[in-house]
Length: 494
Image (cartoon, rainbow, N blue to C red; front, top):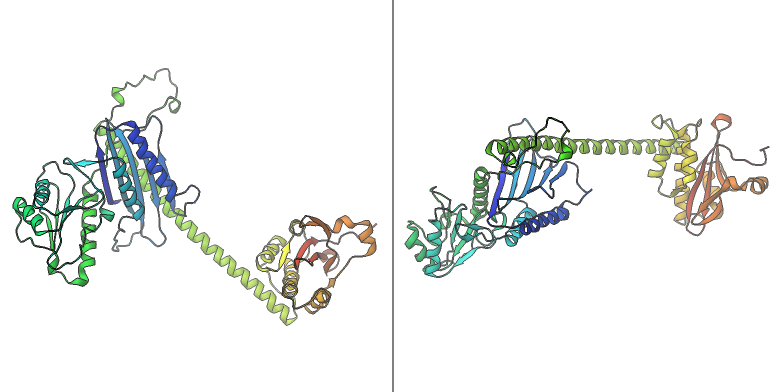
């Protein structure tokens, strides 16, 4: 597991109300960007919270298609000993055995926006200076001296990025126009005038500093990173800006430790009742270093397992999609075979349609000009005996007739002729006896009205007999398949 981003902001003397406000902020952000029941394959969201738990934590694990790493975003809000900590970190877990270069993406914009909102909600100080989400502008000699004095503060924890504008050439700033992904990680300063630069250098004691320089002053005694912009080619400025941002983010990821958090509260209903179990005192529940280390190891193990689960979920979704694509290709081949065999005047020799259920599925998906009534689906799926491909063949041919009727190529009086031309054994009506004695067999509910589906297609005899009853809606020009099954009662019925 590789930490690619880490930020930990702490404020002292905070109250429970501030913690709740920060928790609400994270919850609203989570609901906005990861709505419930809308997670894509490879994405899992876990939350730890409770009325008696000082820690609120959201863990989002994402496995992107084609990526060699699983990204785990953890957002923590903890109030411990009146110290409120807001911690955000991203951990990358490799999922391949290949030795390939990997460049983690720059901080996502929604995460940077969340950090900005958290800073506005709970002000955080670093060496008696507020951490801001906008650059500090220095235009006077006194302001330049204040910046230099802040660099020497021994308690400073965040780096200070000082960009000296090239006011002689009038070039725009390179890195200090906005904080962007560096919000909460640095103090950004922009020196805009010669007076401010003179005041800064009088205390900072730096040499070979001129307009256009960018200085990254690390916390502690580390040597600063100095970039002379005038020595760069214009087409390399964007690359250099990205390199500096990546340098600061990587440095913070390798140096900012995760906050020590208490274990989840132990509840009586989570414990086995035992007459010998002693009551745990409050002092024994206090967090110590050994417990905190053990908790961190367990959480790291859980994150690794969840990363594996997310990656497996993504792989299953991709394989499922491939199977669906292959299934769709098979359906297309079956229908194409049926169509070609029909044009050749032969009975389709297709063996891939194993059941009436499969034949109805193919017809419903690939016969867009037919409307399948629920009765037709139920009766068709219960049909046994006839070859399913024969029924599919008739439905495909009927779909072509429906297309011609809906497009105005044929009229209602030409339906019988069109069906005969397509090779369908079409009968436009039922007998008078069937209509008088067994009308309920042919009646369906359609658009709020009871109608008779008298027109039907005949196929086969005896064990292979099947009838497909159809209703032609003159008002909507829709062809409704009302029944697929055995012979309905008529004048031959006892």
